[in-house]
Amino acid sequence: MKITALALIAFLGIGCAAKKMAANNADYLLENQIEKRLPLYAAQEEQLAKDVDKFLNEQKNFAKEVIPLVMDIELDVHKVDSQYEKLKSLYQRLSLSFSKLMSKHMAPLDDKQQKDFAQILKEENYKLTQLKSNEQMNHIYDRFHMIFGTMSEQQKGLLKAQKKYLYQRHLLRVERRQKLHQRFIEIYQMDMSKDSLAQAFYEAFADYQKIYPDDEKNKEIIKAIIPTLSNAQKKHFEEHKKDLREILGYYLDANY
Image (cartoon, rainbow, N blue to C red; front, side):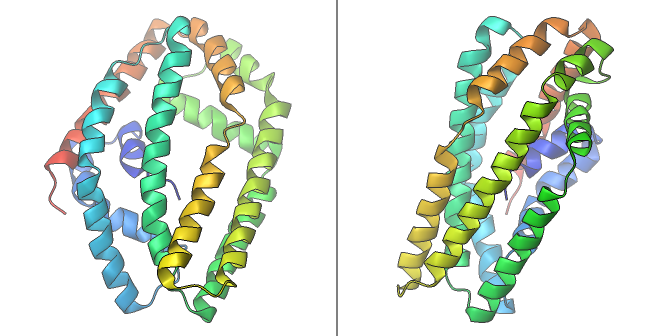
């Protein structure tokens, strides 16, 4: 449930008009993603729509911070640590803001909605547990291709060498998700007001997001990949930075 739709759209390489349309409709895209998981009634969906608009407008100052930081990213091994920490800090801030929105709309769910919500999360987790190691690696290759373009055999070999670790990390993330979702169930069983429930859900999200066991390994992998990047791949990366700046510009201009 990460709020990364705008960034993903930018990296998909879609055309200018499509990017503008996507930014202008970011509220509908975000509402749709939330409603896939939260089984809301009509009146709740109406309130969600208002809150999503408010959320997107409030995040515009955040987007203004993101643009220069992203544009300043350099593919320099010596700058990986500092750049990584800055981006992580921004991501954590955005995630916590989005978690507050989610928590508000999780709190009022009735017994039937809670059961449906738990089942949706259970099915998501089951699908993740069924992901095979090779399938996961293909997803990683796809992300590399999206950001840097065609992957060389050397680069594929570097990532393949991390295959066991990457799959173990995937399983650990699924386990962490399951524990978070179990905590949701326990919170619903507490006799509290809706405001207190929302605060409890927010704290559960915050605790979940504090744990970043992959940081040092992620930096290690990035540092190994950077020296192998060709001029064409570096150019590909720079073009996508420009794409991200462009779509964030459309987002800043949009009225929600």
